Image (cartoon, rainbow, N blue to C red; front, side, top):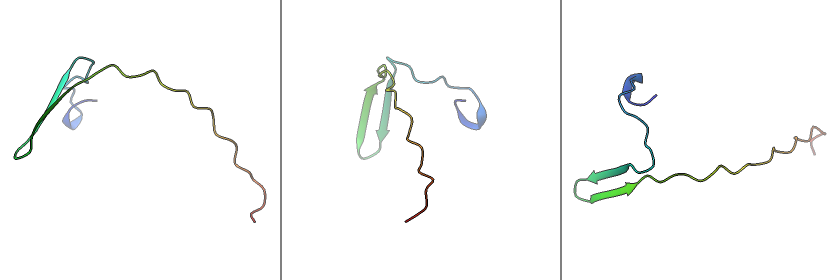
Length: 54
């Protein structure tokens, strides 16, 4: 859900959107949202050894 208090007032960011942030006394920065990379598949972790502790 997007927005405050569970309301869907705003839509999620999409490629091409521009996000601007202004901080008094510091300045303004703007960035364009770009498409993300394809996810990298990570192999499953090894099973934990259940032997006696040393």
